[in-house]
Image (tube, rainbow, N blue to C red):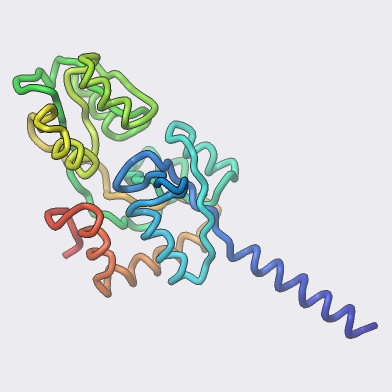
Length: 241
């Protein structure tokens, strides 16, 4: 009987430990090549491959959760998942609400894309995704900001004439311009914004943040993070020196 009780206790403890090792990774699933939903209905992209590798190195089990961008921080804070890994730039404003790992993409450029040259970027109508650093930049620039819930809608706004240009991460815009058959083009100068892209976590989850920081550092040191960036963003992508 004692052995049965002991065995039951050990199994219960093991189950609890296994549960504690599962980390729910929140992402948008709508921002290629950072993250997107593939034909099989699964989260895919740079951050899926990165997140799985980070969990492996940290001896954690990833469970992927899709969440709309405009509620991605509130739903992290409320406990719907444990991390945000969704192309989120590290900013002081966000850091007041959540915590961040070190960046896993170095600070890179944001850019404007339009359907024609000669667009008035300082006084025209500029589209950006809601709650992004690009939307904040446009709002302070003097241009008229139109915000959309998804990145696809910002591009559609330029195509249908609702906006003069879209302002977004250049890494996101490059393949769209390349595939547009000259219907879209880069205009104006690139704009450096933010402190790179990092994982967001609740401020109370310092231990989990440290585990991911160690894993990110190891990928930087052995060169695999640079390899992954080049794989998904091209040979000209900004990497770690």
